[in-house]
Image (cartoon, rainbow, N blue to C red; front, side, top):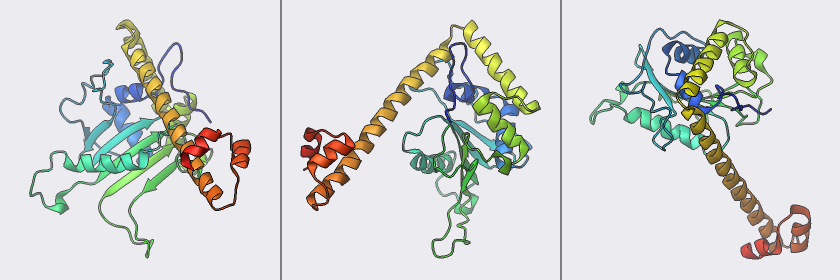
Length: 268
């Protein structure tokens, strides 16, 4: 299933820029994360300066991540990820490290490190298991029931899942809105109204949000092409090993896998 990101007339919630923009609203931000975690959050706070997302600027410094803290000091980083660019698991590791480094002074006791959540809302199924949610915590290989209590949790929301009846109705409705713009409850109507307000404001101010979104689309497409090219070369490298082992011929690879003789000779 393809998740739509942008139309000729407006930017949708599944775009990075729009999502980051409307998540500056405390009610939207809190409500979104509550549905993913399946629990209430009483109060959240954004770091100073975060609300000025430098949104509508088309330079590389624009901040697209959503970062906040709840009333218990738990830290959250939330990101809309429309395309699989091949580095998301490693990025989650990096984000957790950055969260730990924020305002952590030298000499701080380890047990004072706050719990942290890194959440990716994905327009694709990263793990190909069709689950709406994938929640990760570190476990022991020898004792899978043994969880490392390091308080780092990573969650991937799969907007393309067809198993939405397995999650709470509020999360199901939010996923349906994000992928199909279906308004099934009060919260999805709130999301839609915020998206509409942002589009109206953007058009009145010259369409910079749309321009930034189109620029990011181009960069994503370029990155996807780079990933495909890298995967193609990795596959050829393995096929060439089969040639060297006498399991395949150069001609068979050229015929069945659409590689050129020049590409094959490069690895040989």
